[in-house]
Length: 68
Image 1 (cartoon, rainbow, N blue to C red):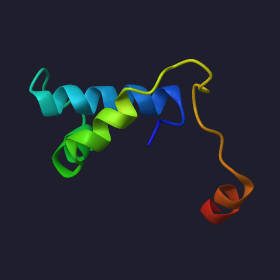
Image 2 (image 1 turned 90 degrees about the horizontal axis):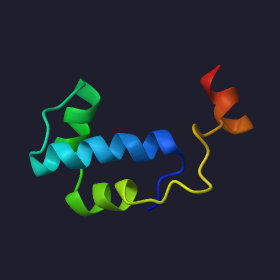
Image 3 (image 1 turned 180 degrees about the vertical axis):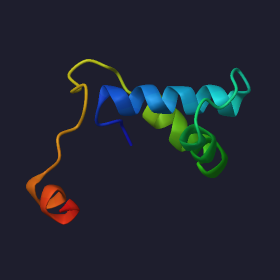
């Protein structure tokens, strides 16, 4: 499962560091993700190459209308 944006890749890089014990959780979201996700899944997201990824994923029309 590759990351779909640079922000997502960076988020999972932080989660991976938390799981490895290299840093403390920075937000409740990173702590929750580190505790609930498999290490392999986090590694897959975190190891995605930055090239060609958008900074932030744009919402599809379906996602946009569901959020209204």
